[in-house]
Length: 337
Image 1 (tube, one colour):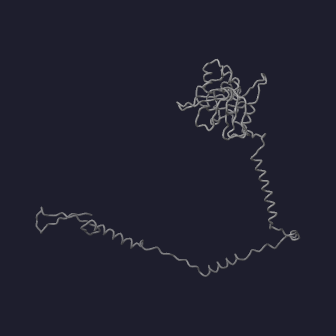
Image 2 (cartoon, rainbow, N blue to C red):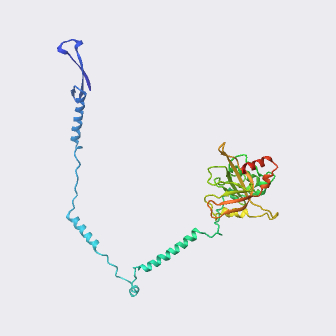
Image 3 (cartoon, rainbow, N blue to C red):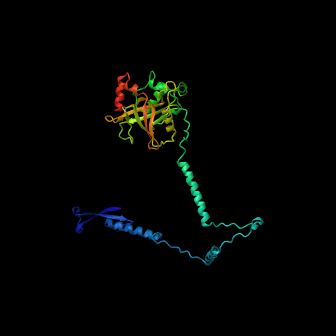
């Protein structure tokens, strides 16, 4: 609490000479300065703490062992030093037989270890190196999966509304899948999946159908770890498998099978592998929509390479090179040079 008093100089009653002095009141006493009042509060707090006992150091309780606990510990230690006795009671049948020897000499142990190591290595070799003719079966597709759809590839490429040399109206694989389904899917599949959204893997460089395969190729992209290119005046093209593909992958077996079949009627090369290409545009930094470059047949590949490298023949090369539509010819030349 702060109070103000007047002090007169020389005890004269003259208001002009009076001096106003500020005092501080705490706990019933008046202090002439703020610091004196603070010191009084600190002393009061110190006295309260000492009276409560909070400032006393904690007592350390020392536990001593009595004679009883010490004796008990000695008895326990003595029991631990006594070696455990083997059971001496045996059945009449076992008492007549020779006692088993659980100690194994080093020679027999080495034989067991070597035999086990040999068996383990043989097992590992079978796991790491499977039979080259045994391809693991692919998982069954979902009802709306593209892998459950049959395509008429000749209709898709060379039909009345065939897509040979045509650039899609929109970018992305989904548009290609839906367009191919509407143009060339078998009637029973179109009826079964009418109004359904088709399921496919948009991140893979190969798309399986039930009886066909689409290969996706990017051209001109600097970020690709591999470079796809057209060879022999664009009559052939390179394609690289995905990072998880190997010689025994089911899709690789399928590509080799489809790429080496012939048309039984005309005895000419035929394939159900369709090539789709898109080119990276440096000015817009985007890919063009996909263009259908027709069917592919097998030329060669490098086994056990990673990624697997293939070279494919363009079955419809002449159709692309000499197409009646000048836009198709110019587009084919722009993509392949």
